[in-house]
Image 1 (tube, rainbow, N blue to C red):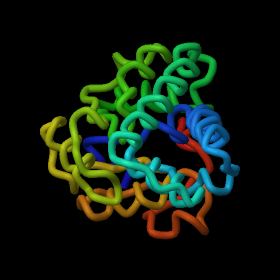
Image 2: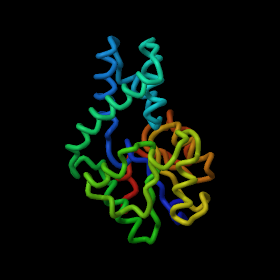
Image 3: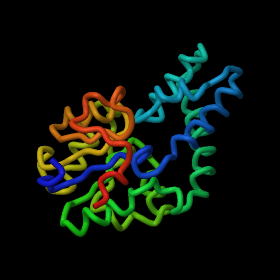
Image 4: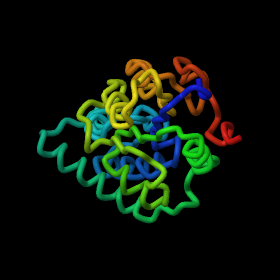
Length: 211
């Protein structure tokens, strides 16, 4: 699978960098202001899910009912706090092996895309100093359907000028693995085999693939 791939499509959070902790801090802060506790276990449900969907899940956990206008305000509030955290991101926060593996793929002539629900993806890649390693960035500003819908990976393979069957998706969330398979791509899961059982192969991190 990896030997024959022509395109590699990477999710960002939990694959290239761990910004999930900053998402958690910002959601936790919002929940606190709303008067309920939001745990790290709760946060697992938000992995790979869009901001709007994440907010719906959070409000459901807290049993909070609000108007559409209030939800929009809350989503903006949460994002503002999250952006404050990620504006301090440094290249040292790239996950082990990620940069080396991206460089290795480029040397092999494999095209590389980012396929992420994040609307801050381009900013984060800039902060990490790896934006130039990507041929295409498909993020939450370019797609409307959240994973497990395959839209982000279909758009990413199209942006690379490749068929989905020529691409391998690298994902750390079950919803992302499902989206990759639905798009027709092969999928490498990064994390727990129990959670990512639908992937074609599961590894601990990209450092395992650096040769």
